[in-house]
Amino acid sequence: MSGFVADTIAFSNVDGPGNRFVVFLQGCNFDCVACHNPQTIPLATGDHFRTAVADLLPRLRRAAPFLSGITVSGGEATLQPDFLIELFTAVKADPELARLTCFIDSNGAADAATWARLAPVTDGTMIDLKCIDDEIHRAMTGQPNEPVLASIRELHALGLLYEVRLLVLKGVNDDPAVVRRTAEWLAGVDPAMRVKVIGFRVHGARPHDPPLVEPCTDELDDYAAVLRDVAPFDICVV
Ligand code: SF4
Image (cartoon, rainbow, N blue to C red; front, side):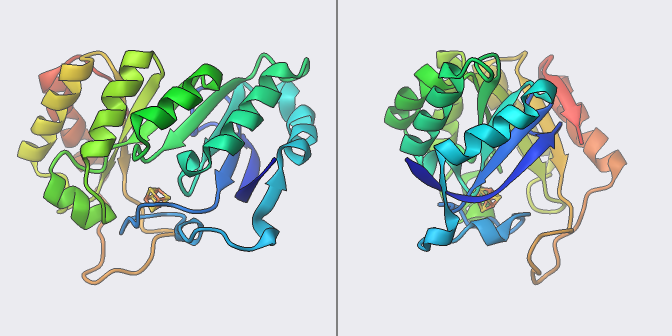
């Protein structure tokens, strides 16, 4: 079994708990204006993206003594569920890798049937929620937010929701009333959930007209304060 893999990094401390080997898959079903990896959006067609599970395992074994786990990101990881299942199954069956946790970093567009297939081999997920307001979400991603909200509810029910990630795009999705609605909705799922507030960074993103603007530290703190005012979330701001 091979997957369409855009890149891998042996060590990351921003893609889930601890130090993680990260596999970035090629192809995404969103087209986010603020995407930092726009080269991973086009669906792969060429064989040069093909990477076999058997080729990833030796790389994982080399890094394993320094790792807490493996995270598959994107593009959109859940567009290749068969590859994810085979990779995670192989990790859990390998005596040198079995202690590693297997996480998915996702835009949340997958349906319940896909999550049900992935659940037996998955230890946790990070889900991006670009905006609670559907109109703003569509403007930011080209897609509706209902599948994302459904995924957050579903993964929480499965005990697989590690973190919800909120990208802050200044002047687009940071209106305090929208942030409060976001917090109230998340609190309805789990008022103690882990939430990562991520400030948009221009570096890596495509040019946009008008230009997209980075929030400053104070603005991110204000955003987090609105969340905290609603519920005792476990909040991290980056
Ligand atoms: S979901 Fe992620 S990879 Fe896909 S377009 Fe949006 S930011 Fe980029």
